[in-house]
Length: 241
Image 1 (cartoon, rainbow, N blue to C red):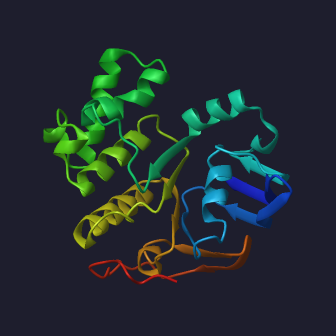
Image 2 (cartoon, rainbow, N blue to C red):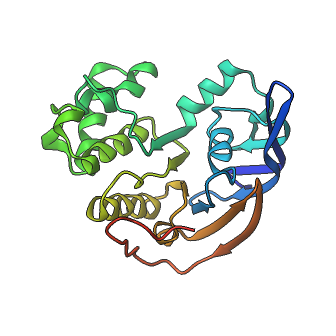
Image 3 (cartoon, rainbow, N blue to C red):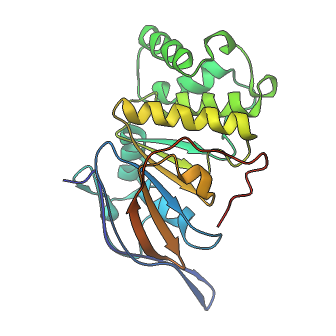
């Protein structure tokens, strides 16, 4: 049974008398421990798909099953519970608390989950060690590089041991070296059993995934397995579709 299953998914946004069909009938299955890249140009529906996949939004039509639960019909409170329990988010702009340390940013999901202080300490320090930032635990985002901030965001996304990791343009604000280091972390996470869905418009970044799903005008126009290879990014990441 796929960990993610979407059938006939549509999303229509209405502004006054104007309706915009962002998704126009998505059928998509993602198996446990897959590493999938979803690519497409701006306006293709990538962000809308990510929001629904991450239980941040609900479809106008269709069904969405996450880990065998029909979340497309859940109310906002239930969706919030699912997000905190099963999904780890990584965003292009990091979304870190600016006045909190790296340790405090990673700790936040554990506080919301009611994890004890002693256990939180162990989990947070282990995660910061895993992303190479154990010695930067007391630094605030303004004291970290872009790559370091994204590594903090990755550690935070893993705090509650989620079933799936959703990454939205995770290297979009990073230089070549930092971008490659983030992709290397994703590759290692996948090898260790994580399910990863990465949204990107950069074909070079997408090469790090094992499956490529192409989106255009709110529909899937292709899905293909690809041989895994280390991405070779240009300095300004201009390899875009």
